[in-house]
Image (cartoon, rainbow, N blue to C red; front, side, top):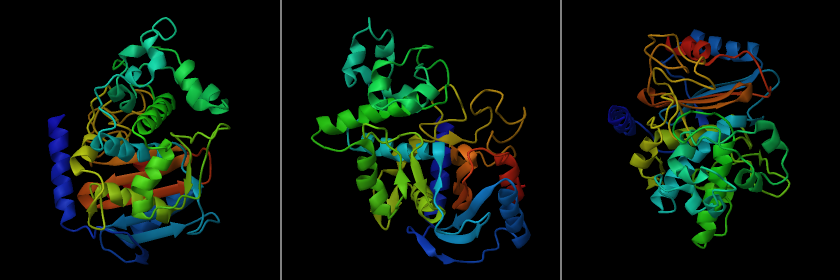
Amino acid sequence: MKHYLFVFSLLLLGMFGCSKDKDNSGDTATEETFSSEQLDNLANYSKEKGGSAVLIMENGRIVYEDYHNGADSQTAAHIHSATKLFWASACALAKQQGLIDYDEYVSNTLTEWQDTDLHPYKNQIKIAHLLTLSSGLSQDFLTISNESNTYQYVVDALDMVSAPHQKFSYGPSNYYVFGVLLERKLNGSGISQNPLEYLETEILDKIGLEYESWAHDQSGNPNIPNGCTLTPRNWVKYGQFLLQGGKWEGEQLIASDLLEEMYVPTGPNPGHGNFAWLNLPDGYGLSTSDSAPEGSPGGMIYYNGYTEIVAGLGSGKNRMYLIPSKNMVIIRQTLLEEDTFEDNEFLGLLLD
């Protein structure tokens, strides 16, 4: 674990030397990192798979963007579960501000879970288990999406299906529970905000990111794991903010070491850190079969190396890839719900 953190720290240190520490999304430059043929192949692959956009930011500047299948720079896509990556920074900031401690039991705040007759074993769940998607809670995909009050549902109705820290289970439950916990922590500290308002005022507004819409349930609770719709030029600002280690226009919004912690696999899946997908060997996606071929130097996102890649992965497939060693953010968007896009094939057009 310490090795992964040390390597990522070195990458960030090297990156700061060339980062412009700002967004220059109005500028488009031609770089020699990739050939025009590679870039055309990348855009064509996205287009053939039903995509709407490919955008690459390098050293704080947009160096390539292509819009296809009727989209343009103003086309906003619902990024689905790639929304989840926003909560990595919100979580790190909440820790910085003393709102949360990863080793704290969730039931300290969700006091309903202290009743072990109604909620057996939930008092064993720590915040760290939510972040690594290893809480043991049921996912209840379809039920949660149809609930009028998702926050109340995840507090009252989720079951325990395994012991905490034993099994990686991808889905919305951990994110919604974190949302309820964060809201209660904020309100208990005298901050009258929901999690999305906190994310906006503390991070998104400060980096100039404007999303087009964010889904809410009928009770007005923001959809934590997959609610965001935005344009590539807005989304890439968040990626650059992460690459810059939480720094924006000279202001350190989040301590870089707290963000680095999010990229260390402390749970049962080496391919997932704290609310972030990683490209480490032996990591996997929704199941253990969703992984790189045995013996690959890289992980399930890109098989042939670049183990420092951090990603936000959403349906469609909507993608944000961070490649610290290249000081690069790659965005791919689509308006589709499903397609046959493959991360390894896409990135291989640039990195092989």
